[in-house]
Image 1 (spheres, rainbow, N blue to C red):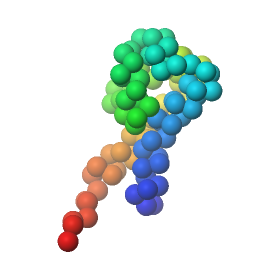
Image 2: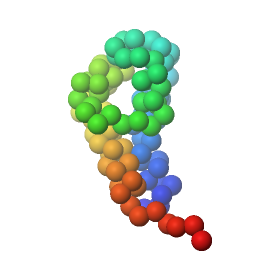
Image 3: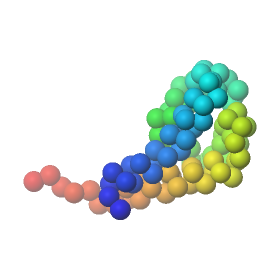
Image 4: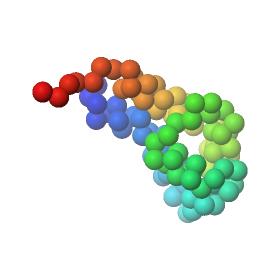
Length: 95
């Protein structure tokens, strides 16, 4: 799998959250408020951050976006796995 493909998987959670919020015609500010987090925290979720201890946060996000927690948790795990894979992979050296 290429680095570009892995990057897409890393951003899978962010993209899913953003698309679902937009489909609900919900602002970032309103989504954050309903979830009980700061607007800046919601923004980093949509930018690609995958929380390490996600159970409570992902449950709140799933509730806000009216989606299943298990579905969101699975997507988060796939994103986290690919983040960790890329971070642990040796990086090519510049010549």
